[in-house]
Amino acid sequence: MTVYNYTARTISGEEKPLSDYAGKALLIVNTASKCGFTPQYSGLQQLYEKYKEQGFEILAFPSNQFLNQEPGTNEEIQNFCQTAYGVMFPVFEKIDVNGADAHPLFAYLTESTPGLLGTKAVKWNFTKFLVNKQGIPVKRYAPAVKPEELDAEIIRLLEEGKEG
Image (cartoon, rainbow, N blue to C red; front, side, top):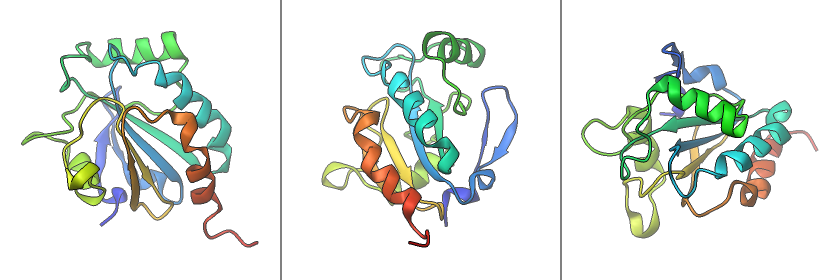
């Protein structure tokens, strides 16, 4: 099982197989527009610009499960991301990341990369999941971990399998 077994609906409503990202290192993030961590969109965009040509993608999944910090419609979320932060990486439609209605991708991510003390649930907005080029989740990062702190891990994943 890999992330490539899943599909998700883009923010514009198109069903997207995650197998479209096969062979790329991925950072999958649950996001929100009205959270204290929302400025991380800037750091995410910088990471995306820095590494996208080397086979790196960021996939953002807005969620309103944490104190209603993502109340907008998909259209409002997309406008906010582009206008406020110039987001160019893929943003998907608003989903649940926890509970009975959690998107199957997040059920897989949380099961594959447990959090602190083995907890499964996503604790807050901007929890980040790093996925290798084979589609296997390798690490979970807490919301307080800034995108720019992931440079070394992203480089390591991008270098994996390259002829030296």
